[in-house]
Length: 492
Image (cartoon, rainbow, N blue to C red; front, top):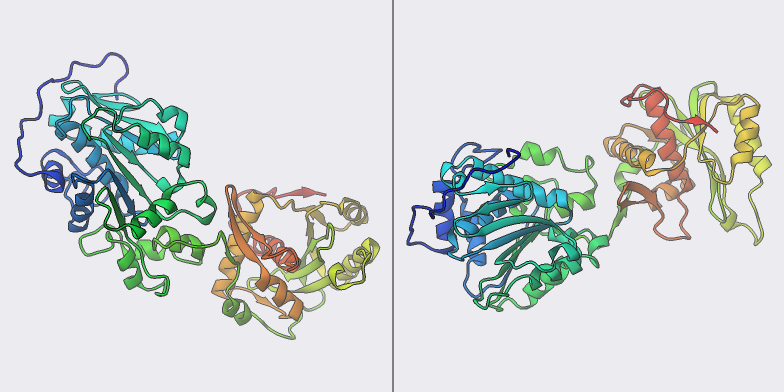
């Protein structure tokens, strides 16, 4: 896009008067005027696949005011939506047609607009009839426009849209969605339509976004002529590692499509969390925002009951001190290519009489004894409420390091540990308490990453937290991790 004054655009309409309408016309429009901007088929005419043609036909039904498409990621939603936007402003016959693209934020909205801009730039017939700006595409000949807006109600209110395209509706707030709907139907000619596209919402967005409500509306009122719902997804009962399951959920995973088995397999658990894979790749509605951190069978397969780390071995001690009635725990991990983990200490106030408190001096003595048994490379701990004990041990010359449990640390450490368990890259001593803490742990998704959490306040997971910290440092010291920075932490 060139800065400064724009050259005058040609004002004549496209020299094309097809007899076809709706999805059939969109198909011909794409083949005649649009070029695929990237990916498979880049540089070639934009062609609708049969499944895309059938899906877009729901939008072009005269009685339909709102159309909702729920489809896994990577199936070409944005490119298809950009083509629909351009077709609308060039071929709808509406003087002053106005298509607004709404997404969860300005970056996402601009991304779809950029796709449309690129399509225009690759089409001489469209390019000479348009003016391209940072946040819009103008067609002076018909006073029409494609505009990108973030999913913020105050930015959308006052619009006069003839077509609204909402990208990733599962993350757009209800207030913004309502403002988008109310921006249509102002011209008295029933020209306004809303197209909402997205993958199933994460559970935590279910109350924020309107998508789940729209899906329920479509499923419960299939005969409503004004509302169209199209869903692609696989039955949750099907195996998630089967390419046939992937094919059912992803129409672009076909002989003529662009999704490949290799690409999907590279995204499958344990590389991604199972809940996220089911939602984003299989189009399934997951009913919770957490999932078990470790499959029972994978964790138990790593057990080496009775195996102990030999005295004098290089180890890491990971310490998680209790703040109230939580457990205080120590895990010992061997610094080796296939590390072994065992309990170094465990104090459980909730199993004691009322008023019991963990004896800090006893914990300190346990750490000292472990340092006599093993060649301790690091003692890592979150200093919260245990700063004094850690300072005492450090002043004695022990290798104490602070490990604040921030999202920046927890996310990669948690993912690495889960991957190691799933791949059988570690072993553990299999104590009853160790198994219980680890198998109680869940993984929760937050806006800043993932972390280990309790399933309930009464179920303790402190040994699992220690394991996460220990494995992070053991992997580093054994040369199993990617060493991006030498200084990973700081003295307590």
